Length: 465
Image (cartoon, rainbow, N blue to C red; front, side, top):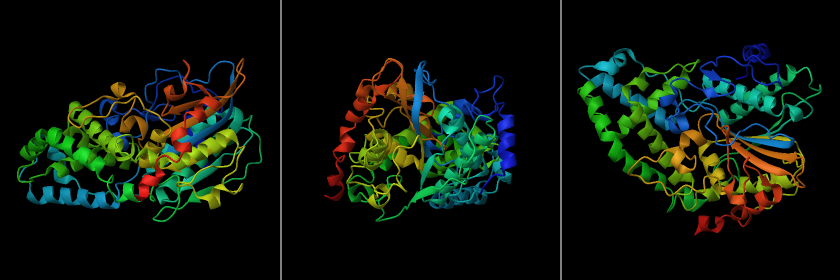
């Protein structure tokens, strides 16, 4: 689905900017281009990967440093907010049907369920999610207007419909911002071409995991689920008991209690404006914190350092990133598609702006292959560790709906070599693995040198033991 150009230009006007300028001062709407989703942040920032993108606190300023010029910028983005997956929408609908059929009363905050009908779809972007991606394109253009005024972005996407649609929505926002910028050059080819990496078994794809047999179906495939199950047995029973007391006869299980929590973010992002769903009031702030950790465990043990082959799934993309940063051909024997990567038409080098669109699990693996959050101690499955105590790691801080990571290359006065900096959802990564300075920057050579895990194949051989 594409938004009309007039709608995009109105969105820019509503945002109080002409593209390329600094954000206007004044009260922020509930969901904005600049800081993301701020409706009831004490709970909505605790929905794990189902949180809508929001600005994550950063100890380092994300402003472009003084006396520095951005020479290239790349975004790696998750798709926008979506309906539940097909398998989840089926069990959510069954849970609601069970409640409606068996509950003999609807007490307290559960009273709304008397008139609630399950209407969520499956897998597709919601209108709210489309809007998130348009805003993301506007924000990227505005931040990197010094480059974006005169060049087009090179855009790639994994082939899932919601990811391709997200990429398209992002380009609409980017292009609308460019049209609104009186200083921008004319002549863009628009719509921008989008190179697809096809998903599915047997396809090499750096934006969607599918090749590593031991990871997908073998020894390491259930580690994330097991960690979540252990924590659920601790934090869910009191919630389960309360819901079943308020809904006598419903007899919700542990899994169904989690489904009821899931229905809070999914019903929220199904609303065009992102209005908070009544499902959210069924749970306390503390319980949302526990739920957030439940989702974090799934990502950490499913696709990050908690899984021996988690970071391996991100190695191919990291080697592509190295190629772009260093202007050299891709050197990789893992998940890269060499038919695409060996062609200047489908993997050009020397571009100033790149945009890649993917999924939350794949971004988690890529961040780990890059060495981000490497100071995080192994997360326990028996007590909550807040993101501040986990080097900034949590599912909601790293891979919410419409998550984005910026990789910046900059030339700074007095520096003989270009510098690299990475920003994840507005949080500047400290880049301790390559000796990051007080502004989170490493020299290009030090940054690339720190990526030895990816350059040496990242344990790819273990995928087929």
